[in-house]
Image (cartoon, rainbow, N blue to C red; front, side, top):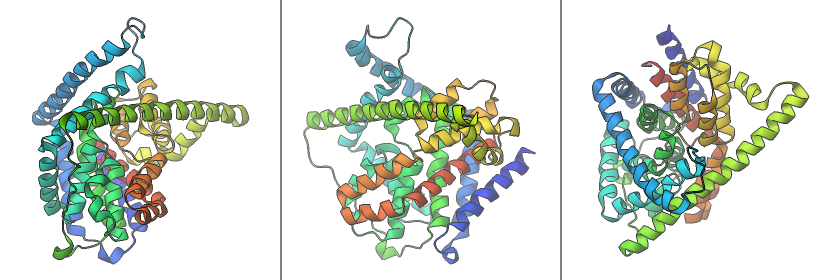
Length: 392
Protein backbone atom coordinates (compact mmCIF):
# COMPACT_ATOMS: atom_id res chain seq x y z
CA UNK A 1 0.00 0.00 0.00
CA UNK A 2 2.81 2.41 0.85
CA UNK A 3 4.18 2.09 -2.69
CA UNK A 4 0.82 3.06 -4.20
CA UNK A 5 0.59 6.09 -1.89
CA UNK A 6 4.20 7.02 -2.75
CA UNK A 7 3.37 6.82 -6.46
CA UNK A 8 0.36 9.08 -5.89
CA UNK A 9 2.60 11.41 -3.90
CA UNK A 10 5.13 11.61 -6.75
CA UNK A 11 2.35 12.29 -9.25
CA UNK A 12 1.01 15.08 -7.01
CA UNK A 13 4.46 16.66 -6.66
CA UNK A 14 5.20 16.49 -10.38
CA UNK A 15 1.68 17.64 -11.24
CA UNK A 16 1.93 20.71 -9.00
CA UNK A 17 5.40 21.43 -10.38
CA UNK A 18 4.25 21.02 -13.99
CA UNK A 19 1.38 23.47 -13.47
CA UNK A 20 3.89 26.14 -12.40
CA UNK A 21 6.30 25.46 -15.28
CA UNK A 22 7.36 28.57 -17.19
CA UNK A 23 7.87 26.68 -20.47
CA UNK A 24 6.46 23.14 -20.57
CA UNK A 25 7.84 22.46 -24.05
CA UNK A 26 11.44 22.80 -22.85
CA UNK A 27 11.19 20.20 -20.08
CA UNK A 28 13.77 17.46 -20.62
CA UNK A 29 12.44 14.22 -19.18
CA UNK A 30 15.50 11.98 -19.47
CA UNK A 31 17.66 13.85 -16.90
CA UNK A 32 14.59 14.03 -14.62
CA UNK A 33 14.08 10.27 -14.75
CA UNK A 34 17.80 9.67 -14.08
CA UNK A 35 17.78 11.98 -11.05
CA UNK A 36 14.63 10.40 -9.56
CA UNK A 37 16.26 6.96 -9.89
CA UNK A 38 19.46 8.31 -8.30
CA UNK A 39 17.40 9.79 -5.44
CA UNK A 40 15.63 6.47 -4.83
CA UNK A 41 18.92 4.53 -4.93
CA UNK A 42 20.60 6.91 -2.49
CA UNK A 43 17.61 6.82 -0.13
CA UNK A 44 17.69 3.01 -0.16
CA UNK A 45 21.44 2.95 0.52
CA UNK A 46 21.27 5.47 3.37
CA UNK A 47 18.16 4.07 5.07
CA UNK A 48 18.26 0.33 4.41
CA UNK A 49 21.83 -0.94 3.98
CA UNK A 50 24.84 -1.60 6.17
CA UNK A 51 26.92 0.74 4.00
CA UNK A 52 24.38 3.51 4.53
CA UNK A 53 24.32 2.87 8.27
CA UNK A 54 28.13 3.01 8.32
CA UNK A 55 28.15 6.31 6.40
CA UNK A 56 25.49 7.88 8.59
CA UNK A 57 27.12 6.62 11.78
CA UNK A 58 30.50 7.97 10.67
CA UNK A 59 28.98 11.33 9.76
CA UNK A 60 27.08 11.53 13.05
CA UNK A 61 30.13 10.52 15.11
CA UNK A 62 32.28 13.10 13.33
CA UNK A 63 29.77 15.83 14.15
CA UNK A 64 29.38 14.44 17.66
CA UNK A 65 33.11 14.85 18.22
CA UNK A 66 33.02 18.38 16.81
CA UNK A 67 30.15 19.27 19.12
CA UNK A 68 32.12 17.96 22.10
CA UNK A 69 35.04 20.19 21.13
CA UNK A 70 32.63 23.08 20.71
CA UNK A 71 31.30 22.29 24.18
CA UNK A 72 34.74 22.95 25.67
CA UNK A 73 34.67 26.56 24.46
CA UNK A 74 31.03 27.04 25.41
CA UNK A 75 31.58 25.61 28.88
CA UNK A 76 34.53 27.93 29.44
CA UNK A 77 32.38 31.01 28.71
CA UNK A 78 28.96 29.92 29.96
CA UNK A 79 29.77 27.24 32.52
CA UNK A 80 27.70 27.75 35.67
CA UNK A 81 24.81 29.55 33.95
CA UNK A 82 22.86 26.36 33.32
CA UNK A 83 21.42 24.37 36.17
CA UNK A 84 22.99 20.98 36.74
CA UNK A 85 21.56 18.54 34.20
CA UNK A 86 19.73 21.25 32.26
CA UNK A 87 20.19 21.75 28.52
CA UNK A 88 19.51 25.34 27.44
CA UNK A 89 18.75 25.38 23.70
CA UNK A 90 20.89 28.42 22.88
CA UNK A 91 23.97 27.09 24.68
CA UNK A 92 23.78 23.43 23.65
CA UNK A 93 22.29 23.65 20.15
CA UNK A 94 23.04 27.07 18.67
CA UNK A 95 26.43 28.09 20.01
CA UNK A 96 28.28 25.08 18.48
CA UNK A 97 27.54 26.76 15.13
CA UNK A 98 30.39 29.18 15.99
CA UNK A 99 32.95 26.36 16.10
CA UNK A 100 31.62 24.63 12.95
CA UNK A 101 31.76 27.97 11.11
CA UNK A 102 35.41 28.38 12.16
CA UNK A 103 36.24 24.92 10.76
CA UNK A 104 34.54 25.76 7.47
CA UNK A 105 36.63 28.93 7.30
CA UNK A 106 39.84 26.95 7.80
CA UNK A 107 38.89 24.44 5.09
CA UNK A 108 38.10 27.34 2.77
CA UNK A 109 41.41 29.03 3.58
CA UNK A 110 43.52 25.96 2.80
CA UNK A 111 41.58 25.45 -0.48
CA UNK A 112 40.08 22.07 0.46
CA UNK A 113 36.42 23.12 0.21
CA UNK A 114 36.72 25.06 -3.06
CA UNK A 115 38.32 22.00 -4.69
CA UNK A 116 35.64 19.62 -3.38
CA UNK A 117 32.75 21.93 -4.27
CA UNK A 118 34.00 22.67 -7.79
CA UNK A 119 34.64 19.10 -8.88
CA UNK A 120 31.57 17.56 -7.25
CA UNK A 121 29.61 20.28 -9.05
CA UNK A 122 31.19 19.36 -12.40
CA UNK A 123 30.35 15.67 -11.87
CA UNK A 124 26.79 16.60 -10.88
CA UNK A 125 26.36 18.63 -14.07
CA UNK A 126 26.88 15.43 -16.07
CA UNK A 127 24.01 13.77 -14.21
CA UNK A 128 21.49 16.59 -13.98
CA UNK A 129 21.90 17.98 -17.50
CA UNK A 130 22.25 21.51 -16.15
CA UNK A 131 25.15 23.96 -16.20
CA UNK A 132 28.40 23.81 -14.25
CA UNK A 133 27.49 27.05 -12.47
CA UNK A 134 24.14 25.67 -11.27
CA UNK A 135 25.74 22.42 -10.10
CA UNK A 136 28.58 24.23 -8.32
CA UNK A 137 26.06 26.53 -6.63
CA UNK A 138 23.98 23.60 -5.33
CA UNK A 139 26.98 21.93 -3.68
CA UNK A 140 28.35 25.23 -2.40
CA UNK A 141 24.96 26.15 -0.89
CA UNK A 142 24.98 22.93 1.12
CA UNK A 143 28.38 23.81 2.59
CA UNK A 144 28.67 27.59 2.71
CA UNK A 145 25.05 28.62 3.33
CA UNK A 146 22.18 30.19 1.41
CA UNK A 147 23.46 33.76 1.49
CA UNK A 148 27.26 33.23 1.59
CA UNK A 149 27.22 31.09 -1.57
CA UNK A 150 26.35 34.06 -3.80
CA UNK A 151 29.55 35.84 -2.81
CA UNK A 152 31.58 33.05 -4.45
CA UNK A 153 29.85 33.64 -7.82
CA UNK A 154 29.36 37.38 -7.52
CA UNK A 155 31.22 38.07 -10.80
CA UNK A 156 28.52 36.19 -12.70
CA UNK A 157 25.43 37.34 -10.78
CA UNK A 158 24.93 40.46 -12.89
CA UNK A 159 25.34 38.53 -16.16
CA UNK A 160 22.78 35.81 -15.48
CA UNK A 161 19.37 35.74 -17.18
CA UNK A 162 16.31 35.40 -14.96
CA UNK A 163 15.87 31.65 -15.49
CA UNK A 164 19.41 30.77 -14.42
CA UNK A 165 19.22 33.11 -11.43
CA UNK A 166 16.04 31.31 -10.32
CA UNK A 167 17.83 27.94 -10.32
CA UNK A 168 20.70 29.31 -8.24
CA UNK A 169 18.29 30.76 -5.67
CA UNK A 170 16.16 27.58 -5.65
CA UNK A 171 19.24 25.51 -4.77
CA UNK A 172 20.10 27.88 -1.94
CA UNK A 173 16.60 27.59 -0.46
CA UNK A 174 16.30 23.80 -0.91
CA UNK A 175 19.51 22.91 0.95
CA UNK A 176 20.94 23.73 4.38
CA UNK A 177 24.43 24.93 5.28
CA UNK A 178 26.91 22.55 6.85
CA UNK A 179 27.52 24.93 9.76
CA UNK A 180 23.98 24.34 11.00
CA UNK A 181 23.77 20.56 10.46
CA UNK A 182 25.17 19.83 13.92
CA UNK A 183 22.30 21.77 15.48
CA UNK A 184 19.77 19.73 13.49
CA UNK A 185 21.39 16.48 14.60
CA UNK A 186 20.74 17.35 18.22
CA UNK A 187 17.00 17.52 17.52
CA UNK A 188 16.55 14.90 14.78
CA UNK A 189 17.93 11.45 14.11
CA UNK A 190 21.20 11.99 12.14
CA UNK A 191 20.09 9.33 9.66
CA UNK A 192 17.21 11.51 8.50
CA UNK A 193 19.33 14.67 8.40
CA UNK A 194 21.96 13.05 6.16
CA UNK A 195 19.29 11.51 3.92
CA UNK A 196 17.57 14.88 3.50
CA UNK A 197 20.86 16.62 2.66
CA UNK A 198 21.57 14.17 -0.15
CA UNK A 199 18.02 13.93 -1.53
CA UNK A 200 17.48 17.71 -1.51
CA UNK A 201 20.60 18.20 -3.61
CA UNK A 202 19.02 16.26 -6.47
CA UNK A 203 15.45 17.27 -5.64
CA UNK A 204 16.34 20.93 -6.17
CA UNK A 205 17.48 20.16 -9.72
CA UNK A 206 14.42 18.00 -10.44
CA UNK A 207 11.88 20.63 -9.40
CA UNK A 208 13.81 23.54 -10.95
CA UNK A 209 14.12 21.59 -14.23
CA UNK A 210 10.32 21.41 -14.45
CA UNK A 211 9.34 24.81 -13.06
CA UNK A 212 12.12 26.61 -14.90
CA UNK A 213 13.36 24.47 -17.84
CA UNK A 214 16.14 25.65 -20.13
CA UNK A 215 19.15 24.39 -22.00
CA UNK A 216 22.58 25.99 -21.69
CA UNK A 217 24.80 26.29 -24.72
CA UNK A 218 28.41 25.18 -24.23
CA UNK A 219 29.76 28.68 -24.78
CA UNK A 220 27.55 29.96 -21.92
CA UNK A 221 28.40 27.13 -19.52
CA UNK A 222 31.23 28.89 -17.75
CA UNK A 223 32.10 28.66 -14.08
CA UNK A 224 34.01 31.59 -12.66
CA UNK A 225 34.37 31.32 -8.91
CA UNK A 226 35.28 34.47 -7.02
CA UNK A 227 38.35 34.03 -4.86
CA UNK A 228 37.94 35.44 -1.39
CA UNK A 229 39.90 38.58 -0.64
CA UNK A 230 43.33 37.58 0.60
CA UNK A 231 43.46 37.70 4.38
CA UNK A 232 45.86 36.47 6.99
CA UNK A 233 44.88 33.20 8.67
CA UNK A 234 43.78 34.89 11.90
CA UNK A 235 41.83 37.61 10.08
CA UNK A 236 39.91 34.88 8.26
CA UNK A 237 39.41 32.86 11.44
CA UNK A 238 38.07 35.86 13.36
CA UNK A 239 35.67 36.67 10.50
CA UNK A 240 34.24 33.14 10.32
CA UNK A 241 33.91 32.91 14.10
CA UNK A 242 31.96 36.17 14.14
CA UNK A 243 29.84 35.01 11.20
CA UNK A 244 28.99 31.82 13.09
CA UNK A 245 28.07 33.82 16.18
CA UNK A 246 25.83 36.10 14.08
CA UNK A 247 24.03 33.04 12.70
CA UNK A 248 23.50 31.66 16.21
CA UNK A 249 22.18 35.01 17.48
CA UNK A 250 19.96 35.46 14.42
CA UNK A 251 18.42 32.00 14.80
CA UNK A 252 17.93 32.59 18.53
CA UNK A 253 16.20 35.94 17.89
CA UNK A 254 13.94 34.41 15.24
CA UNK A 255 13.06 31.54 17.56
CA UNK A 256 12.12 33.93 20.37
CA UNK A 257 9.94 35.97 18.01
CA UNK A 258 8.31 33.13 16.09
CA UNK A 259 7.65 30.87 19.09
CA UNK A 260 6.09 33.79 20.97
CA UNK A 261 3.99 34.89 17.97
CA UNK A 262 2.76 31.37 17.26
CA UNK A 263 1.84 30.96 20.95
CA UNK A 264 -0.10 34.24 20.81
CA UNK A 265 -1.87 33.36 17.54
CA UNK A 266 -2.68 29.89 18.90
CA UNK A 267 -4.16 31.51 22.02
CA UNK A 268 -6.32 33.91 19.96
CA UNK A 269 -7.57 31.16 17.62
CA UNK A 270 -8.32 28.84 20.54
CA UNK A 271 -10.28 31.61 22.30
CA UNK A 272 -12.23 32.65 19.19
CA UNK A 273 -12.64 29.41 17.23
CA UNK A 274 -11.94 26.70 19.80
CA UNK A 275 -9.01 25.37 17.75
CA UNK A 276 -5.36 26.50 17.63
CA UNK A 277 -3.87 28.08 14.51
CA UNK A 278 -1.36 25.23 14.19
CA UNK A 279 -4.09 22.61 14.46
CA UNK A 280 -6.04 24.44 11.74
CA UNK A 281 -2.98 24.47 9.48
CA UNK A 282 -2.57 20.78 10.26
CA UNK A 283 -5.88 20.06 8.49
CA UNK A 284 -4.74 22.12 5.48
CA UNK A 285 -1.44 20.24 5.18
CA UNK A 286 -2.80 16.80 6.16
CA UNK A 287 -3.42 15.69 2.53
CA UNK A 288 0.20 16.49 1.65
CA UNK A 289 1.40 14.58 4.71
CA UNK A 290 -0.75 11.61 3.63
CA UNK A 291 0.62 11.44 0.06
CA UNK A 292 4.13 11.66 1.51
CA UNK A 293 3.40 8.31 3.16
CA UNK A 294 2.23 9.35 6.63
CA UNK A 295 -0.76 7.34 7.99
CA UNK A 296 -3.99 9.37 7.90
CA UNK A 297 -4.40 8.95 11.67
CA UNK A 298 -1.19 11.00 12.12
CA UNK A 299 -1.52 13.27 9.08
CA UNK A 300 -3.09 16.26 10.87
CA UNK A 301 -0.45 16.21 13.60
CA UNK A 302 2.33 15.92 11.01
CA UNK A 303 0.72 18.56 8.77
CA UNK A 304 0.75 21.01 11.65
CA UNK A 305 4.52 20.59 12.04
CA UNK A 306 5.04 20.95 8.28
CA UNK A 307 2.99 24.17 8.24
CA UNK A 308 4.92 25.53 11.21
CA UNK A 309 8.15 25.13 9.25
CA UNK A 310 6.72 27.00 6.28
CA UNK A 311 5.33 29.99 8.19
CA UNK A 312 8.18 30.27 10.72
CA UNK A 313 11.36 28.21 10.22
CA UNK A 314 12.70 24.68 10.48
CA UNK A 315 14.04 25.13 14.03
CA UNK A 316 10.61 25.98 15.44
CA UNK A 317 9.13 22.97 13.61
CA UNK A 318 11.89 20.64 14.82
CA UNK A 319 11.29 21.75 18.40
CA UNK A 320 7.59 20.99 17.89
CA UNK A 321 8.43 17.55 16.52
CA UNK A 322 10.55 16.70 19.57
CA UNK A 323 7.57 17.52 21.81
CA UNK A 324 5.09 15.33 19.91
CA UNK A 325 4.02 12.04 21.42
CA UNK A 326 2.28 9.13 19.78
CA UNK A 327 3.86 9.52 16.33
CA UNK A 328 5.20 6.36 14.70
CA UNK A 329 8.88 6.09 13.78
CA UNK A 330 7.89 6.12 10.10
CA UNK A 331 6.04 9.42 10.50
CA UNK A 332 8.91 10.95 12.49
CA UNK A 333 11.33 9.91 9.74
CA UNK A 334 9.25 11.35 6.88
CA UNK A 335 8.57 14.63 8.70
CA UNK A 336 12.24 14.92 9.71
CA UNK A 337 13.35 14.68 6.07
CA UNK A 338 10.74 17.30 5.12
CA UNK A 339 12.02 19.73 7.76
CA UNK A 340 15.67 19.74 6.70
CA UNK A 341 15.68 22.70 4.29
CA UNK A 342 15.47 26.49 4.32
CA UNK A 343 12.07 26.54 2.56
CA UNK A 344 10.16 29.15 4.55
CA UNK A 345 8.94 32.71 4.07
CA UNK A 346 11.87 34.33 5.87
CA UNK A 347 14.31 32.73 3.40
CA UNK A 348 12.82 34.82 0.58
CA UNK A 349 14.08 37.95 2.31
CA UNK A 350 17.44 36.40 3.19
CA UNK A 351 18.18 35.26 -0.37
CA UNK A 352 16.89 38.37 -2.15
CA UNK A 353 18.81 40.52 0.35
CA UNK A 354 22.02 38.56 -0.25
CA UNK A 355 21.74 38.94 -4.03
CA UNK A 356 20.73 42.60 -3.75
CA UNK A 357 23.82 43.30 -1.68
CA UNK A 358 25.92 42.12 -4.63
CA UNK A 359 23.77 43.41 -7.50
CA UNK A 360 20.75 45.60 -6.80
CA UNK A 361 18.89 44.94 -10.05
CA UNK A 362 19.22 41.17 -9.76
CA UNK A 363 18.15 41.36 -6.11
CA UNK A 364 14.89 42.98 -7.24
CA UNK A 365 14.42 40.20 -9.80
CA UNK A 366 14.81 37.58 -7.05
CA UNK A 367 12.30 39.40 -4.82
CA UNK A 368 9.72 39.34 -7.65
CA UNK A 369 9.87 35.55 -8.04
CA UNK A 370 10.20 34.98 -4.28
CA UNK A 371 6.87 33.16 -3.84
CA UNK A 372 7.58 30.90 -6.82
CA UNK A 373 10.94 30.18 -5.24
CA UNK A 374 9.29 29.13 -1.97
CA UNK A 375 6.70 27.08 -3.87
CA UNK A 376 9.42 25.12 -5.65
CA UNK A 377 11.59 24.65 -2.55
CA UNK A 378 8.60 23.34 -0.58
CA UNK A 379 7.90 20.81 -3.35
CA UNK A 380 11.56 19.73 -3.12
CA UNK A 381 10.99 18.93 0.57
CA UNK A 382 7.78 17.02 -0.24
CA UNK A 383 9.59 15.06 -2.97
CA UNK A 384 12.51 14.14 -0.71
CA UNK A 385 10.19 13.10 2.13
CA UNK A 386 8.03 11.01 -0.24
CA UNK A 387 11.04 9.12 -1.63
CA UNK A 388 12.46 8.60 1.88
CA UNK A 389 9.07 7.22 2.92
CA UNK A 390 9.47 4.39 0.41
CA UNK A 391 12.27 2.96 2.53
CA UNK A 392 11.00 3.61 6.05
